[in-house]
Length: 403
Image (tube, rainbow, N blue to C red; front, top):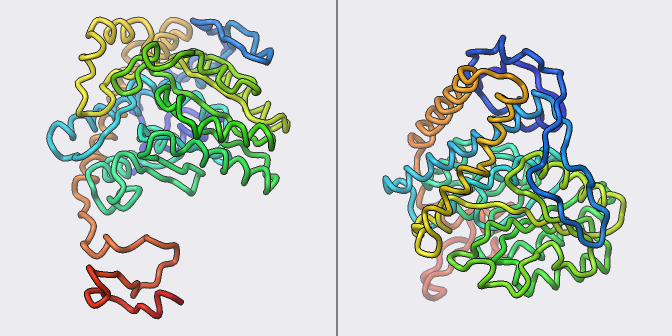
């Protein structure tokens, strides 16, 4: 059961946080203090522009409830990913598992600037995007453990999350495969004239894919409402951007389309840049490129220790100076006067809720063997024909399958 929020939320944050993010009621009265007050939150890095004026501000106005909601969502994602880490090490998650901890500000900041009518598609580091689009942590953890209650019925796993209800189209296991699909989503939005924008996420490693440039060319020719978003965590698997890219200024890679390079560890900076890019697309001006300067704490996947191509000092240095979750927490204390006790109460409530959802996911059954040949086609015939090694070894009604 959902735990009610102890305070009202408004705007984009309310859509993504109030309805889903539970936290402890401890300190609720104190948390209401100065709720409507606005403060100036400075940016840590300059926004770099290409072929556009870009957002010129070096800071942004924010209310306490906005920052509190954004911090909660990032903390919630961080705890979910750390839970997945432990499940993998306990061999309850098998196969590939790519964690997002460190990059939460990108996902949360972007969602705060858009609506569920806009489309998102990403690569295989997709757990937190699934949550930001409205799914539950129980659904994600169940999918990771191969349970039938998972978001892909236990048949997709870490790399194939999906939530079509709110226009999240995965979760793609092939490097760069989502890039032209994102352009296709934008084509659909333009064809339908629904005013929505498609956000196509990819990493710095996939920024060198040929299909990205093909998709960008078509998007520019047809002025599609698509934002190509490079989540630059500086390592394509174990290859640093300086070793893998002749020009690592990914926001300029569009060449004939405008771009911004943004501090992807600053959730409010991400939000404002996303608003700017989305407004550009909604105005019918064509595609846009965003480069999010971010960092992943884990290795490329759980099979990668993450310290053979970078040292522990580098990772700990980013954690200490740029961690997006801690940064937002510091704003709540230093700018809005929240007590550490209040925040610890919220953190405790989130951890307890994740533990409860984890237990439900663990208790869920695995898919039946028969589920292996279901969901191959939309509205699939229940007596779907399955071919064996030869036709004589097949099962099902071949004629009804043809029909």
